Length: 252
Ligand SMILES: NC(=O)c1ccc[n+]([C@@H]2O[C@H](COP(=O)([O-])OP(=O)(O)OC[C@H]3O[C@@H](n4cnc5c(N)ncnc54)[C@H](OP(=O)(O)O)[C@@H]3O)[C@@H](O)[C@H]2O)c1
Image (tube, rainbow, N blue to C red; front, side):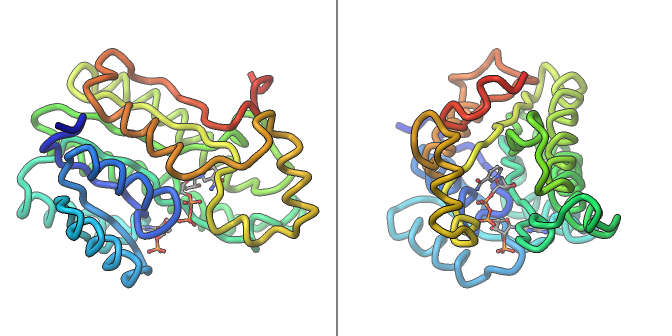
């Protein structure tokens, strides 16, 4: 059957990491999934081939979510090919170890712009153009981070962008109710490419802050996203689900 049967759902930044796991989960629940990517064409092609082999309905579309012209063109393609959209997962995120590791006094405003343009502007643009196709109603899920709630000495542009995403989630939920629900997932440390930046001592130190005693898995995020996209969450809007193994229990 599938909890997202026949729904058309766009996942941004789905060529790798968490977005890829979300695309797999969404397709597995019967949705027609659209995989957005920016530069990892080969990974996106492999994912589409895998999903089609498994009998799922999947297509891919390239767009840099930080560029209005490319986002506009992406939604024109989606309109042409599908005519309608039921869900958007704003997952694309700027991943730069260099900016992440800069201390406050080393940062430039250009660093902020680089990160904010992908995470926050990308979320705004995809939502702004995407809602035009959500004539049957729908659900938007934005991806934020616990560092937006707790503050941090590292990744400062990133946590500022993610704070903006939490604020935007609430504003959009109010603006788009009751037709479209808008929620966020607020993530702790999830095991994707960035874990390779860490030495084993650093990984052990980070894990020591997590009551569950490990990093999260992309598939564990995907399950919560499927729930928020589905008709199992018809009365949930404007909220966040924190997925962090208990790390941020005392953040609020
Ligand atoms: N992993 C964690 O611990 C963690 C924690 C908190 C929040 N998050 C958030 O979760 C999301 C996914 O994280 P991840 O760890 O899976 O990241 P990742 O492995 O670095 O993957 C990032 C994805 O975003 C895409 N992307 C980057 N810039 C883009 C752009 N301008 N336009 C379109 N796509 C773009 C990349 O596509 P290309 O390769 O094709 O460019 C890639 O598919 C991000 O928003 C991240 O901030 C992750």
